[in-house]
Image (cartoon, rainbow, N blue to C red):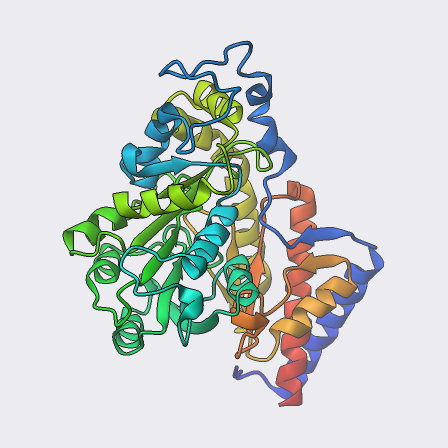
Length: 423
């Protein structure tokens, strides 16, 4: 961070920042931007879901959804989300409400049973590591920590993970068993993977014969503009490249309908689907098919999903526009920050001067604006540059959000000008 401003000019800017911060602290705010949760108004869009299935308890094939069975989930629901998630319906599994549970289970099953193409259980192998594009999703990193899986950071680019780095690492190290990917509107950068990135992930040579791409397509339908981003079909690309078993695709309705009562999905090759079904049969007699039928009746088809997400967008887009407006008005031209302008998803990434993120988050918290901890966007909670802050605009109302972002920018200016004057 450099500036052409004189010491006196910086001192004046710092004095104003201190006044702004004091005024912020005096308001006694209690604002929370820590998680990307749907707002109550978004959840209200799915209120009719809770009155379904309205006395109907039979699926399209005549199954009584109140009873046991149906481990793969309702066929009609899988048909709806096959297009959304780019997975053939026959290779898609509809489960409970949490895709994170499915990712957890896939890791557990891979460690305790043999995935297709593997030579042994992962837990029996000498080394187990995952590539982690950064900035990335803290819950992915938490799963790795939970199971003692080593995490290797990989830089993100505007087209996805740096594939030169990825290809080099996976080609030389058989201990690297997977990579975490949020391919569309990534958490937290908003980056969508280019067609070339998808193709390289599918065709790259890996030292591990059982390498897996954990493709967390959490924001597949979560657009914020009139020009929805479309990504290439990873599952098809892997099959065409001769690596049909490489991709594990995950998705859910958690930020589409009711976050606490949605449906999660797993898609992959026929061999991988049978592997997961066989393992899941030991832990479940079937998912909540009543809830799955509710979603079928509520959403109806893929066009119904798109129409519903347009209503979601109408609520979210003004919030993201508010964030962009305030960041530009308060920090534009200062040299103290840069930020992403996502076309979808749930987050904005704010980059502050190196060594400042933790202090910015701490000062904001002291003034009543609670943010995701600095470092959460990196493995082990350690951002080596201490520069990345994740903003989650979805939950607060517009007035509260405006106060929170104004407060955040005041903290950025305060910490940034302090650092410049101390240099």
